[in-house]
Image 1 (cartoon, rainbow, N blue to C red):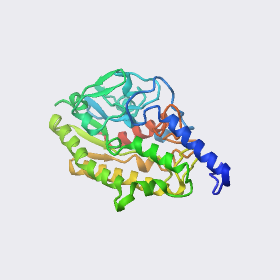
Image 2: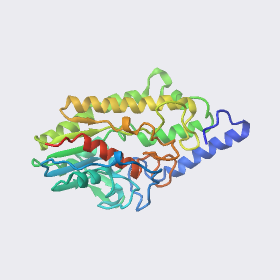
Image 3: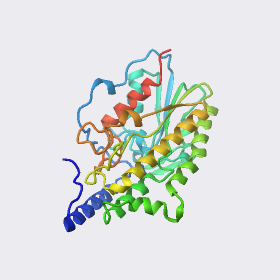
Length: 317
């Protein structure tokens, strides 16, 4: 059903509060974040076609290392493997699908939910233990590295939670935009800009450890529709705030792309292929909305789509 444009009176307020409460409950499960969700399955969101499947390459590949946060780890997608358990690492995340589809001799996945750029060089404490500094896995003989990082540096989980909270009382306004631009400064734009140097440092760190590796830096897939006012029942963000948050995500992706290219790495656009597969879609979505297992994270179909984008960025040689 399409999102109604003007639910009336108390019914509208109750619906808004209910959606925000549902999101608050969902956020008990770490949202880009700190602990895994066991073996809970992500809703696949419909059928997909063969274009989302990674394809075989003839690369003379040896060692592939995957770095990143929960968008790379595959939180909530079976099977959840690896240690510590709190990283939420799936053997069907896009790194695993890429490794299998291309056929690397060695594959190391150290992605972890909640990871920030600082966790590339420092240990990260999560439920069940400590994930070592992710860059420890990159060695001189590494041939390919993928990294997806930066969302937690700008406070992804906090942004979603706060925007849902303020939207409950003003679903037709732009309370989140007002919150983050109070005083005349766009706080989220400032956070994105401040994260640029951190992403650049990660790329340099990979180059230092593996001078001959191909480095692929991924952006983030679309959470909200690429146009329009969203879907309050699934993504409880006020209609007037949807363009602001969409533009913030695009700003983040543009920053990551710029830092990847400046650092001699290849940017992998996963936003473009995910347009039309956002969390508002009843089927075929790559990212979930208010889902207790994987709130606002890629599902299994999304990881297949991202794996295809990575595979396309690794031409045969």
